[in-house]
Image (cartoon, rainbow, N blue to C red; front, top):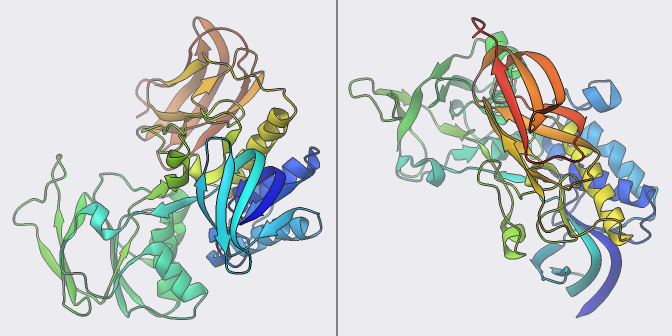
Length: 418
């Protein structure tokens, strides 16, 4: 078994991992290693040929591939080590990483600190309980994106999309542009799951109907999808009898949500937050396991890649400070509570002397106008008036959160503005 000694190991070469590795090297970590299971860096961005990336970070609209290439170029110009086509199998309690690849075989990587940046994965048909056979033509939106954008393959001729997640909305437009028919988008919830700009640019502009409170109840076809049955749902998410409708199609695209890829995290003893789906983190994006940090969509599913990169840099700064002995293993950290109209907050706990801290959160329901506040007891740390809030869109703010006790972040809706 080959043994490698490094300062910081970054698991994942997508936007979070690339930003983390570059920031760690910039801050003085000498031996930085990126471990990537695919044959190239860039992660999911390699199949995102649409624009809208980098608006906050670079003040211009880039495609996903362009955004990724800026970071890839910077890594290639540095002395950061990269191991591609390398699968991480296990993380030990002492931060030893066991991985393998075809050229080197088994690897034992001894690291001073680890940044988890494995990204997220899509929910599949079995996770949304669609009944019927499993014929060809039932694909996730990400798989359809890869087939069309990278493989040059059209996976069907007439599609039904289940779920209104952003990848599904983007692929609705993409399929229309490639000549596929898109019968409609069906969302089981009463509100759409994607960003407003994608609803407008991908559905409204192409006259693709969105059906809320409606779901796919059955898939028909043995070898290939022939049709699906859709039905409206009641308040308990149960199909309403008499509303069933059969739609002829040969492609069912699933855009039913993303899940942080945390199997490695759990195996390493990292505690997971059931609300965010990612690890419980402190202000440095360090998990409950000292020296293991998390960034990007493995920490929480972000809506903008700019935030993904920013989280990678936060985690990298924390990892460097950990190596230098500047992060104490504080046993009792103060909790950060999601208050009124807030679904979750990251980070979820803070040290006493955390200083300026960046918070990320999502609202629990749509609101036209509300006041965002961050309080420690009776002390107001941050206050901002917000407009047109929706659960798919992430809010972020920075505040000095030093001292005090439990923090509560809440959104108080303005009367009569719902």
